[in-house]
Image (tube, rainbow, N blue to C red; front, top):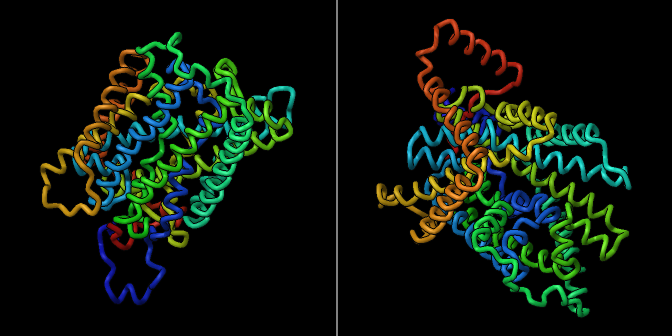
Length: 484
């Protein structure tokens, strides 16, 4: 049965809950924990020094953290506007498809699953693996093979859990979000105790301009904005959110307020206990902070950092699989990936597709350079989405918009994205150029995918047969009810 078919009344009565589609199981609480849990990953615990290094002083770095939160809020509000008027899951992809057309939408999809998502997941996986077993090898470093093995086991577990149950994955996200907020609260409390106790010497001359370099301030904003990445994930799962017209705007506003406050107070705590040079030389600021305050809890901090990474991974896997699911449903990806497990009601093929490239990148291990490749694509397409919102408003002035933001908000965010893209081209033309080429390599794939009839008949028959066999093996079928 096609994805757009509505089940008849008789069928609905007969099958009841047996109808196959993605259920609305994301409550407001789950939406907030998904968003907060994917924004707060490993960065705030491990290496917030990028903002400090490029801002030049403590005072300006704190202002940049706040400004990054405000700019991220502009992007999140723009996405919430689109998400409540275009009621489809898929995030970046579906917004580009509906506002700018199929080619930019497909290129965003291609970049996501060939470059952005595997590299991002693999990097966080390796951080998770390192911090989960590092305490077992103190004072030595954990073996690289052991780190990679634990990383691979962790990602396999999360993919299996997301294949098994939407509710279990959402509940796990809630648990890990609570854990990471408790970790941040612990750091904040310890820092505030030291601050109230009179340890304020690190804030003297907080705005000292001796090491200030104006040309590096954009890089400080880049680091800050990167730490806030993940605010868009709720729009990946719009069709599974209960009352999205109300809950999506509330989610992005509440989540970014929480994260901005947490980031600001956590950095204040770091600066209270650690000197500027100690923050800049530390490979794991949270661990250094624990060593200076309560050395006995350093292993606990290490475990909590690992759990924070685990929660961020779970949220990213949960949300990004929906982009692929929707793209397949729209005809931009093989039909198999728009199918749902007949009993578990999860997008099993879309979830499984992410694993091979992630395992490959974990095996390679040295993936940090690849993250530079995708910065160009990431910010370019987010800027295009908010430009698309502006054009969509002009083309469809009468379209109902349950949540409508002033146009100045997407204009500010689009300008910032264009600035970051230009800065990437200027500061790192090689890696940015490679990222651009990888993105553009999706153009021929797009035309092959869209014009399937141009493929040789024998090849098309083989693809159809393979799809049928995989469908039987995975026990998946197209969704049987329209959810948008």
